[in-house]
Image 1 (cartoon, rainbow, N blue to C red):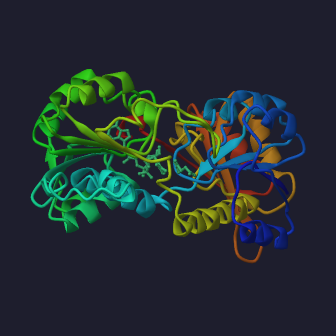
Image 2: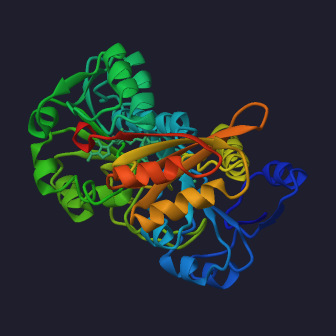
Image 3: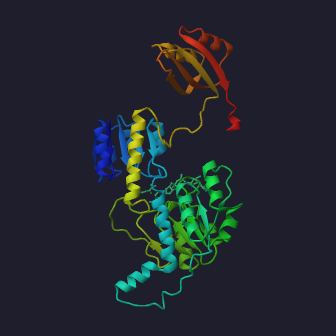
Length: 406
Ligand SMILES: NC(=O)C1=CN([C@@H]2O[C@H](COP(=O)(O)OP(=O)(O)OC[C@H]3O[C@@H](n4cnc5c(N)ncnc54)[C@H](O)[C@@H]3O)[C@@H](O)[C@H]2O)C=CC1
Ligand SMILES: O=C(O)CCC(=O)C(=O)O
């Protein structure tokens, strides 16, 4: 396959992929505007921060997979990719420790005013008096919004500082996250108002999507305690930045920010931000994931996704429908011979049943196989008989799924 890397990944990763027979081209200077003109001829596009707009999918001739070498996929038009049948995968969890480390770093930097003390000493000013007023973190309460890989990694580290942890009760939380939250002693609040009004620190670890954009608005900030600290290492647009600026100007809050709504997409740029230069803010250059450890782990994840794709698996794909849309699963055991499945699909087509998902596995020895086919709608008795009558079909059964059980 031909792979285009529009951001820098370790050379060893490309070498490893080339050893597997792939052709890799790395052009880290490519921008979102350049990509449509460069994408022709590539099967796989790998990006870190470079945006992938719909024009890329319109211009592509053989693109089958986009890999986000990181967690957040908000920089990729995943809907446009889905419309064109291009898989988009991310590499979840691998940079969580790095982001959690920076989150705690920002918290310590704010509490002890470390950037200001360092700056003064570099200017030759000794001012122990001024910098002897930190409050300390022991026994403080932290609200964690978004209990995924990073939220839990932050919880583990904050717990070691003796910080009390809380989050929002959420029935749809994964079993793993719910169990880990319990092990870490994270208390669950029933409402955002209760969570914010009882926390000294609020840390954001949600993805940017329609429900989280500007989640932190004037009302949210107003519900936070006076003197509280807001940490955002998720995405800039999760915060209503003018509202945050107003709260900072009023001296009500302090903030640690790694991400900004209008941050530059490139590695280096002239950029003025009233938030980043605010005296109540400790800001960094969206470097949460930027440790060697995290980038090595992410690069290994990229290779795993390519290997899985070659083997026919869409690993960590974020734009396939997560539910099986079919209402009936047909299980068809058959002799593993050319043309049997074509006849099965022909019968389904004649009956007007759309295939939503199918898988065919061959039994050991290579004589027989079993196909599992999800269809939208209920097969008639006549169809079941027609399927069973196909030469080389050994048996047909059906299970109708109750979608409401979810
Ligand atoms: N600063 C940086 O360099 C980095 C930033 N990130 C950002 O952090 C985000 C989170 O990353 P991970 O923890 O790895 O993702 P994750 O998918 O493991 O966790 C996200 C969690 O947020 C929860 N969530 C989603 N919508 C929510 C809502 N409305 N309210 C409460 N919870 C909600 C999800 O259920 C999930 O548990 C990424 O999407 C990315 O935007 C990720 C890596 C590096
Ligand atoms: O690769 C980067 O530096 C950005 C990481 C990030 O924001 C993510 O993984 O979502």
